[in-house]
Length: 344
Image (cartoon, rainbow, N blue to C red; front, side, top):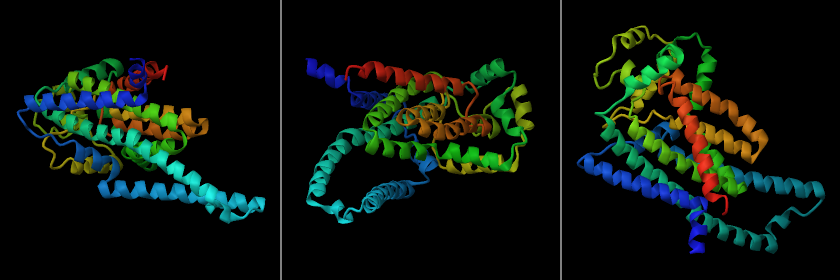
């Protein structure tokens, strides 16, 4: 019994719990949707990695680069010490490499495989949730909360400022490539900070379960989809319509919005997962665990994370209230994982 409790306190148990949770959610939503198909996996994959081939290419490139740097550092250090560089290929090192790759294979099986399975099940469940939420949107409620907190509609006002073109591009890159940044950090943590990797993955999936509950209780499309383009042709409150009529952002923001609209072409149902913001939750998670890994890395990642968060509202992809709620989700998921795994 004690061994079972010990296993349940490991970070990997949180990932399998999330897989079970999301799998049940997918089956239940599929039942209520009467077998309808939502499309989330292809959208999020394309948006964050620019396609499967690009994803695999960058994954292979990072792996090749890491191996090359490791070899180059060893050869350089050996040369500086006057040692034989061929010692890198000695029998002793080959034996160490065999043990290393044996352990690596086990970690890929028990740590990385659940992550991939969890991401896939998450995408399936989100697809069904988008379909289920399409007739129960609460966008106007979120706009009311925004107005109460700020006195304006930030997602419909922030894009009207005179932003430097280069700054908007920085925000765009940070917003679009948050997924790639998470992947790069996960790759680094897996090979050099394994404990950080395990905890961060567990916190990611703990956050997914909290986010999923939030998306179910407060289904909402992005302000871009719901109000600016009004893709479903729904009614818009008069005051909000005035903001929409006056929305004339600069060229860089218009170009980004056109790009996002093209990416969503062909989707059966548009995303309804704005509240809380997964984008904000993941950006803060990245900054936190980068800081945990190395202080300098956390400081380097922080501007990227902040710009990515700014992009959620600047590009009308989230409501203002989504930002603090996304931060709370991240804080809650980290504390939950720490509590569950503190004795592991």
